Every structure is written in structure tokens, then in C-alpha cells.
Image (cartoon, rainbow, N blue to C red):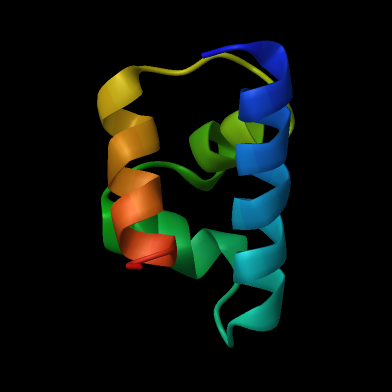
Length: 62
């Protein structure tokens, strides 16, 4: 993923979580990952593709 696309994706997902009624911890729990792992992704760290796919499918179903 290019850095611009990744940054835009992270920003979009972070904003989607903030607009939802769920905390990052709640989202992470429902995804079966730790809140620190979700936070790492949202703050620019590289994570496994399957995690990114899981996050996108849960947060932004469209």
C-alpha cells in the first residue's frame, strides 16, 4: 500500500470509529484483536494485511 493511500485509509477508519458509538477498544474486541494492535495500525504502524481487511470490513461495510 502506498503511504498516501495508507494514510488516507487510516484517517478514514479513525474518523469512522470516532463517529460510531463504539470505542477503539470495543471495535478491537469485536474483531478479536487487541486494542493496542488496532491503535498501532491507526497510528501508522504496519500490520498484517488480514487485520487491515478485517478492520475495513467491520468499520466501513460500504
